[in-house]
Figure (cartoon, one colour):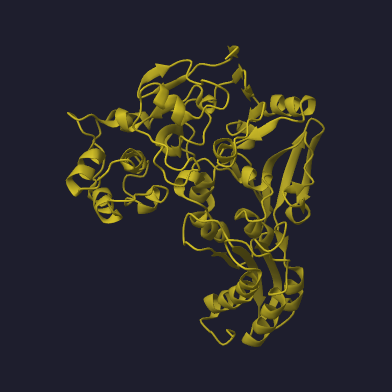
Length: 474
């Protein structure tokens, strides 16, 4: 590394670690292992297995003066992105002579065999053990991003459910009552490039204005995969995930605004019940470990046609706020995507927020068709937002993913529904239209014929979910 400025290092297991970035593209996993903390492992380098899980102190989200221990994939996060942050690894939870309660229950239940995945399970389980809502039952979905190949999940499940509540004298319980570390302004320059965390949104926008070739990263759940698997080495990286101007959730009279850097887990906790369509979508989005880092703006910014959030947001008639040094502009999401991983966003612009108009449609659903129920990429994704008044469909909004080069609205199907009676006959006719929406292709996930068939079946399923009738099914 030729030069390092504006860095403070990270605190790991209560001990400050300096010069832990190695290079601009060194991930947190490798940095920790280079310092002898070899409990976390690399299993997939894609955030799929959870063997690399660590705990990071983050703002609770409900109260900015409190902390939540959040498990994340260390294989994806650049070490520089944890500058100034507090990290706990499996080694920091306990030792062979003084086991942590999570480690003790795993040992009692026989939850470890080869042990490769165990430290990751321990960190995910410990983060849930220290949940700020101690009266809430242990959520087994908190382990959804951790995979085990030899022990089997029953003893791990038994260990999780055997856990009580932390002792009041536990130092990590006391830590919850204090604020999480503020994001540290960071500027790391090495032979392989430069990594910066600006101090504020204005600074980030000025960088993008002057250096439009900069690579913008938030949770790094996509960027980290490209670095690890494809060998990408962008020379100019700007981290925006902790910028306060891009965070927060605000309810206005006519819309809900969600900051682009709000993580999906934070959104799930905050509005999962009040926005039922998002409440259905988010638990199916990858795994909890991924959602703890992934952001709403990042999922839209990649422009992927198989991203899970666009179909739901299209059905909600959401818009994105694009910010630059010239000011803000609001673009309806239906007009945002222009081609495969392309959009109307200029190189000098950032997605700063997503706005969802209010009131919400009363009938909503999110259907994800994939080979696995959780932690999988969609073959087809469909979002619905419908209003039926006096037996007549007055409003229908349908968002689609996985059936074209971009996410899209099913305009022809919407037209076939609106103004028609809410009956099996209407649904059957509209389902035939929906099967022809988009230009689905065949790949290793699904054939084009299967994707088309799933579209029609999805609408029939939506009808049966709200009526209990199955007459529309062909």
